[in-house]
View 1 (cartoon, rainbow, N blue to C red):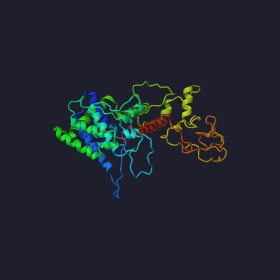
View 2 (cartoon, one colour):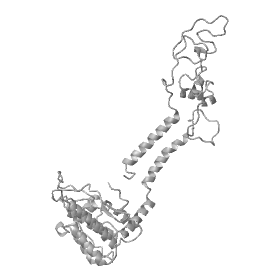
View 3 (tube, helix red, strand yellow):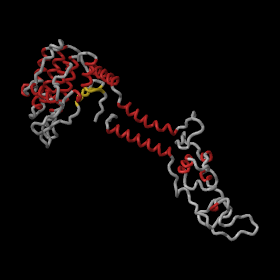
View 4 (cartoon, rainbow, N blue to C red):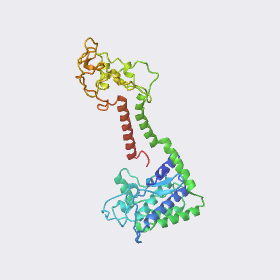
Length: 397
C-alpha cells in the first residue's frame, strides 16, 4: 500500500476541536469535493469489456479519508467495497460498516448502491461544519436507530457562515430516501464546486495542508511516536551487551561466578594463569573447573590452554609408540610406565607404551563461553522484538 505522509480526516477534525477553531467552510467543502472525485472514479469504474462494475465503498468515514501534508485527499480501505463482479452476494439484514456513518437503507439491512456512499459524504461534511457527531447514541443499537430515522438538524443556527445554499446541499445529500438523494458523487461534487465559487473565498491544497500539519504536530505532542517505542525496546535489549564491556572503574578483584567482562577482542590466552585453579574445595574453583575443557586439570597439562605456546617435543603422540627397550643401566630415564612425578607419561622424555592417546582440540570443541551464549540470546531477543513490531504494525510499512 502507498504510504501517505500526513493524517486522516478524523485527526484533523479533532485538532480543530481541541484548538477551539471552527472548521473553515471553504476547507470543508473542498475536502468534500475531493472525496466526491475519488468516489466518482470508483462508482463509474468499468471492466476491460466496458461493463460498469458498480463499485460501492460502504465504509466511508473520516478515518478512511487520508490527507497528506501537501493537501492531497485520498480515500482508503475498500475492504467492505462491493462490486457487481463479486461472486458472493450480501445477505439480507447484514449491517456492514461503521454504525455512525451508515445510510438508512444500510441500517435497515436493505440492498445498498453507490448512493449509500453519498449519504456518508453528507455526514462527513455535516460533522466538519458542526464540530460534533451527527449520529451517536449511548450504544450501537441506539446509534443504528438514529441512522434509521435520519433526522438531520440544520447547521445554520450554530454557524452563521453556513449559507442557505450549503444547507440545501446538505439536506439533499442526507435525504432519507435514496431517490431524493444525489444520484451520483459527480453531481454532489459539482454543486459544492459552484458553492465555493459563489463564496468568493480562495481555498487550495496549500490551506488544507496547513490544517494537516497542525494535526500532525498535535499528534506528536500528545502521543508517543511508534518508531521511538521500537527504538526503546531495542535499546533495552542492547543494554544486555554492557555486561560484555570492560568496566575500568570496577575493582581489580571479581567473583569467579560473575560473567567475564570483555571489551572487543582481547588476549585471553593467559587468563587461566591468573586464576588459582589448583586450589581445591571452593565453589569458585568448581565453577572455573566446569567452564574449562576436559583434561585441563590433569597434572602438568594446564599449559594446553595457551595456544600461542609451541608444542613441546615431550607431548604425547597421536598413536601409542612401543618402548624401544629397557633403559640402559645406570641411566636417569624413568621406566616405560611413566615417572612418579608425571603420571600417565605426560611431559616424560621417553614415550610410554601405555600412555593415553592424545586427541586434537577439533574432536572435543570447548563449550561456548557464558558471554557468547548471552550475546546470542540478546540477538535472538532483538530479532523477536523487531518481528513483533513489524507484524504488529508499529513500523510503518
